Image (cartoon, rainbow, N blue to C red; front, side, top):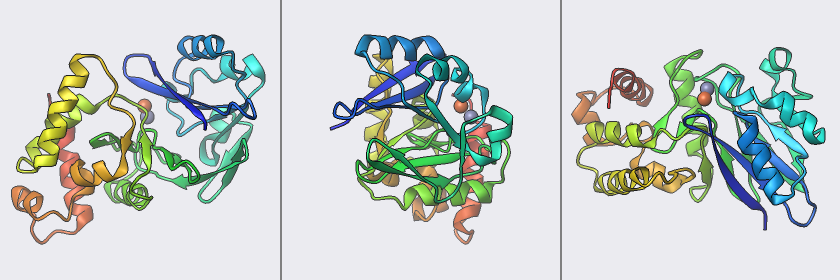
Length: 255
Ligand code: ZN
Ligand code: FE
């Protein structure tokens, strides 16, 4: 059994540490901030062997130099940003990364940025979605197009429904308040939004999430839902068009 620790960093980022007590190997997903990650490694007595980066944004890579030098970890990140950030190895669609006897599959999920990748560990059904899919949300489209982001979301949606999905930020409070404006009759969503607001009031994380739950509640994955389409008055639009409209409304949503 691998041990997984979710580490809050900066104001709303998450890093994740995975540790295999058999091999003693430890893997970090994203490097938003040095001190909370080092504190966790120290407290657990773990040596950091590998680092995987989802995309080139500063709030995901800024801890790399210090974290790499601590235990000389091997750093992998998207091929597209290898020159910019300086990973040891680049990865791209279909790359498989070996970590502690496991196969980690690389899925390109551009849209938020062009280089963005999601890492999937099939043996544990773990997905590290970075800033592509959030609990009840999806990333803002900075470098790609809505179509691109839609395709990326569909790649994540096609993983096994019991996949445990980690995301790069705690944005769920706002995501839930927005989601209920798009899908107000969805009882699963209303129930989840209530529990999200309770968790956030207690400062508890809402990451990770289970893909099956997202498929029932995340509006960006429910573009074929008739009630959502009626609500948006987009009965005859393509799924990608419905997705783009939901994303556009979120960009203008404050709450
Ligand atoms: Zn980002
Ligand atoms: Fe980010």
